[in-house]
Amino acid sequence: MRMTSCATFVLSVATIGVLALAPAPTSAKTLRWASKGDATTQDPHGQDESFTKSINSLVYERLFQPGKDMTPTPWLALSSKQVSPTKRIVNLRKGVTFQDGTPLTADDVVFSFERAAKSKQFRTYAMPAGTPKKIDDHTVEFTTPQPNPVNLISLSEVPIMSRAWAEKNKSVNPQDFTSKELPYASKNAMGTGPYKLVSYDSGVKTVHVKNPNWWGIKEGRYESNIERIEYQPIASDVTRMAALKSGELDFVLDPSPQDIARLKMDRDLKVWEGDELRVITIALDQARDELLFADVKGKNPFKDRRVRLAMYQAIDINAIQTQVMRGLSTPTAIPLPNPKGESIPASFEKRFAYDVVAAKRLLTEAGYPNGFGFTMHCPNDRYVNDEKICVALASMWARVGLVVKVDAMPKAQYFARTPKQEFSVCMQGWGDNNNDAMFTLKPLFHSNNGKGAGETNYGNFKNVDVDRLISQAEVEMDLAKRQKMINDAVEIIQREVHVIPLHRQVIPWVSRANVALIHRPDNKFAPIWMKLN
Image 1 (cartoon, one colour):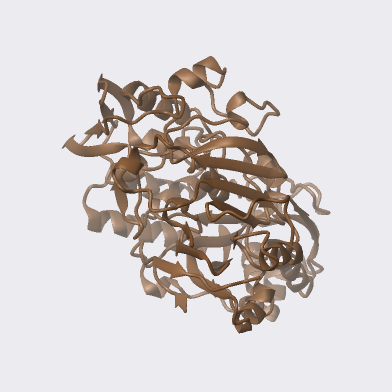
Image 2 (cartoon, rainbow, N blue to C red):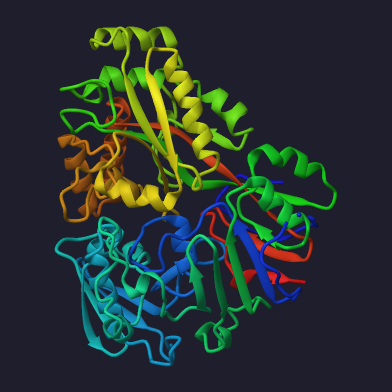
């Protein structure tokens, strides 16, 4: 069965049998799982990267979180009310404690939003939420400088941490990946969530245990019998699957696409697939006067739309879908995670045609009849077949005279460099389950203003019309007018080829027979809804 919408399914998963992690007791209450990469930090405001956020969410919770059906659900917030166009009152859940026994109060919420606003990774969420103000121990007022039509979504993106713990452990400021500093919060954690962090050995193993004092237990939200979670990153696809088949693992988040057809034929195995709310794109440096890692000196070819379009039209996206992704992708022309949910017209979903002759002609018109050379940087343990996609692109671009060196690296290195704009051509994946295009447009396609917009604009381009439309849509309360602004901005981004869209991933998960779980389109597993039978 393939999941083709944002709906989620409770899955009773059939057996699998595969290699070895460190020996672990065969307990129905110990979940042992793996994927190819690791969390980059334990700091909840340190890195806006989905897998890292998924691991962090075991410990840190937000005011509102997606429920089983991905609908925003009151979590640490009990309720909220928009009392004026620029003010929202949030009432906190009482009786919630951090894992050290201290109570959650408005002070912690105010601190967390102020801390997140200092983070280059999280201020795109924290700042639109508004300025937080404590009214009493369980009430917080958020004030925005102008109306924000998606204020509630902004409130759903900031994890809440203990102010006292952060102050005690010199972690008042979020981790900055542009420096080499490793604050206490990057290796340790203190939240209100259903699990406690026991140990974090980056690249080796991470262990969590059930928090017996989690507030959700009394409310019946803990539907799991899992008391211990052991995670180990295993880069090798073969080794990861061998661990699952041998019984050393219970769950694998990312089986290799090359294995899916074979795994589906195994009667002791169950594979579940669904479209992920994530778009994969290629970012091109459109700001520097001279490209990094290129043989073109004194100029930047990517400033010329004809060059960007040539690269786009040289891509055989169907070959990537069938040969590289083995069918586990949906080609797209729209650089957004969920165009349908974000109300983008279906007519926008038309790619520039694959045309090698046209691509060569465009390069010649732009002054590069013999092409040029450059380096493309990619992660090799983050997205489905990320490095293989980059190698395939390099081969396709070679047909039009572009000599491309692929420099692939682990995501821990990759995401430490992308905020510094150290690459001229790089792969970018963006996931979002909010069904609102502004949470992609503002961080990715607005110019970087140092105030939360454009923080992940890795092409570092500036289009004044796109900036204007995004800024207008951000405060437009008339939803029809707002959607028109969003559509116009997307249309310009597509027409000008400010980014090269590739596809949305189809995400398969695999687990052993005794596992029941919920498959999610945000590719985040939720152990509070998992059982080992």
